[in-house]
Image 1 (spheres, helix red, strand yellow):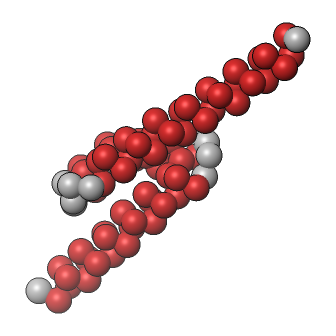
Image 2: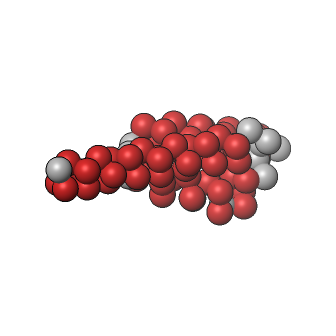
Length: 77
């Protein structure tokens, strides 16, 4: 039973680190968010994982689209 507890603790630390990285790292954060959403172990881990990953994914996509739009606007003016 102690081994399962250690495995659950490692999984929770892994999930928390991936969620933090999905917010901090701009382009690679999309990969972390998709990994969290597609990995069945993380998806079933807790109810707050999926909404945080979705919010992170949408935020990263909006930031990247805004940057691309800004660059295109700068180059055309």
